[in-house]
Every structure is written in structure tokens, then in C-alpha cells.
Amino acid sequence: MNKETEIKLRASRATLAALRDHPLLKKRNKSGWQQRELYNQYYDTAGRDLAGAKVALRVRRDGETYIQTLKSRGQSVAGLSERNEWEWYLETPELDLGKLGDDCWPAALADLDKSLIQPAFTTDFVREYTEIAWGRGKAKVVIEAALDLGKVLAGEHEEEICELELELRQGDPEALLELAEALTADLPLMPCDISKAERGYRLFDADSYQVRLAVPELSAEQPLDDAFAALAWHLLGSSQRLAEQYRFNGHWRLLADWLAQLIDLRALLGSLGQAAPRATSHDLRAALDALLEDWRPRILAGQHDEAARQAAAGQFAEELDATRWGHFSLSASNWLLRRTWTSQRSHRGERQGAAALGNWLTHQLSDEAGALNLARYQQQPADLGEQLPRLERMLVWLRLARPALELPEVDRLYGELAKLAELATTAPDAEHLAARTAQAHTVATLKAWKALTK
Image (cartoon, rainbow, N blue to C red; front, side):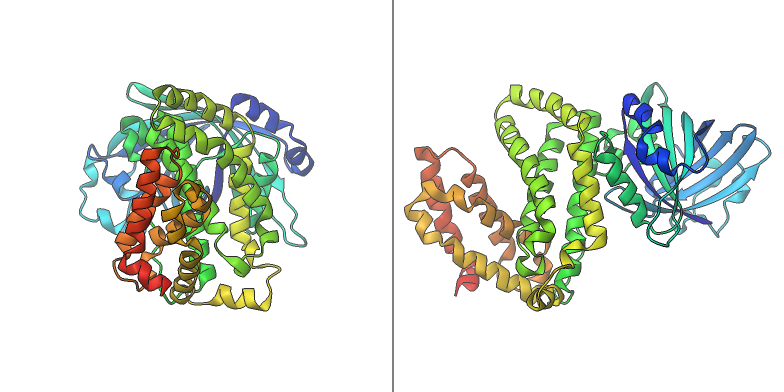
């Protein structure tokens, strides 16, 4: 068994061509570009039992060599994936079920009749590859850069493969993110947390690609730093998967959800106070603000205007053809992996970062609730929009960290605050002003709100 650590970045054909002569790769190229054709037959049962168990099974023809591979889904956060894989060299291209023993076969499939496994789909592509020496002080790092161009074929359906794959051969996984971030600074490369196998399954069933990741399980006792990191990884990874799926099928709800992840991530970054000094997150917040400035009005317009929805598809394609989204995604991943927010902290910031989540969050929400001053907005509802950032800071924690809170009727508090935040984004006409006043009153009467503001 080997452990595979890699990043996949979706590219255009023009970008693949540019990568061959990119100065960053050219300078550190150890072996020169080589090429091989790879033909891959994937297998599963008719009921997709292997996909359900998060494993992929294939036989690859590489020149005159046949290799059978079993891969587990493993861990994947924001495009950086780690998977276990088992490989066996074969004499013929036929699948050898005898290789799939208890040492590699998932326990979830222990009762599966392996004779039901049959060909499912193919991925055929040309790979140009080289080894890159990426210096990190005295530590030796070797990364294989692979340019893949070809197709996934599933029945009558097909999708182009056009991507850069960076795989760690030796050294620290941080190096993958460093190299990827540097490349996305001037080339349109999109983090793509979807394997070639997942693409094949998606051609059969568009909903097989899971875009809504499970919310991390938080506890009241865990340190704030750890809780923040878990939630930020979750939001960033979800945004990348939503972007990929919207690119694939253009469903409006996916784009709206993509924006919601970015709004939550921005709110999360702005909520930490001295635990995350502003200087450490300045570039990340600026990049997020630029994205939100462009995309928030487009999503708001599309909620009631079909023409705006149609226009958004082309605008998103333009976003992906530029460098902004890919560079932000990789910069954010690198920032989180390095825990950059913990640098330059005062002693008070260190104490906050180490504080138990439950205690910190209760105090944080109390401070936000007191500063919101709902009585004012019952009298001056037209000004409620100025409190949208504060409402969003409260909502992201209430949505994702409710189990760490000891508040009465916390679910209701979240729901009513979400209604108030939505009203804060609407046009301040007479009807909506009255609704703002009424909703501010509703929130002020909640048991949880009274507990926060007592």
C-alpha cells in the first residue's frame, strides 16, 4: 500500500500549453517533460457498490504494462487529497479479483459478491509529466507535475480531462500548496477536488458528486483555534466543490450556495478579534471582499430575474477563465495549513486562541448581540443594512457551532436571525421596512436573545 498526496487543478488547453514552458516549472525541472498514453478501465457493480464505499477500482494500460489499482477516498480538504492505494502488476488487461483480499478490501464490502463487479467507464488520456525540485530550506521536496489531456467515457456520455496534477513524491505536503499557489498567481487554474473516477460516476448521475460536505463536529471544550480551522476548511472545501459542480451543470442553487460559503468564510474571518490579528488575514479578507463585491449583487438579482440567472453562467465562466478564483482558493488553503492567523498574536490573542470554544462563543455572541441594539432598528428599520456584517458573523457560528452552545431555543434564534439578515439585504420600501421592524421585535423577544443580552 502507498499513500498518494496530490492536488488537481482544472485547466484549459491554452493553460496546459503555457505550463510546459512556465518559468517556475522550467527552472526546477529535473528530468525534462516525458509523455505516455494511459488507458484506464474502471469497474463497479451495477448498483455502484464500490462508489458507495468510497473506493475506485481500475486496470490501467501504460504502454505494454497493465496495472490494477484500488484507491480509497481518504482525506480531502480544499483540493489537497490524501488517499491510500494498492497496486498490482498484471500479465493481461483482465481484472484479477483474487488480488482484492482482506488487507485492502473495505470492510463495508465484506459481504459483496465480487463476481458482480463489471466494467463501468473508461478514462483515456495523454500525460506529460516531469519531476520538480521544490526547495524548502534544507528539506528536499520532489513533486511530479503531470499535464493530463483526454476524455472520460461513460456509455454515451463523455467529459474532457484537462488538468494539472501535482503529486508529492518526497517532502512536506505544504510544498504542493506552495507550488500550486505560485502557479495560480498568473495562470487560470481551478482547484478541482474531484477524481477521474468521480467524473465517470457523475456522467451516469450528476448528483453522485457530493458538494455539501458534512459539517465538522465541534465540542464546547475544544480550543477556538481548532474549531476555527475545522470550520474554515469546511467552508473553503465546500465552496470549491460547489464551484466545480456549477461549472458542470449550471444549476442556479449551486451558485447561490457557493456565494453563501464565501459569505460565511468572510464572516468567520472577521469574528476572531485578537485571536486572528488583522494584519495576518488582510490579503485573504481583501480577496474575499472583492469576490463578494462582484457576486453578491449578481446572486441577489438572480433571485427574482431569470435573465440575471442566465447571465451569471457566462460571468462565472469568465471568473474561471481568470486567475482570481484559483489564486484565492490556493492562497486560503496555504493560509489555513500554515495557521497563519496564529502569528503576530499578543498574549491576549494567544489566550483567546486557546480558550474553550463554548466559553469564547457565548461571550462573542453576547458582545455582538449587545452591539446590534435591536431597539434602535425597530425605530429606524431603514438603517438595518449597516448591521449585515454583524448578523452574518453571528449566523455563521450559530449555524456551524450550535452543539457548543448552551442557550435555550438556539435553533429558533438562528432561524429568526437568518430572516432578519435576509430582510437587511432587501430594498427598504414601505413593505420591507415594516417587516424589518416586526422581525427585529421577534428576535428581541426570544429566550436565547434575552439570555445573550441580560
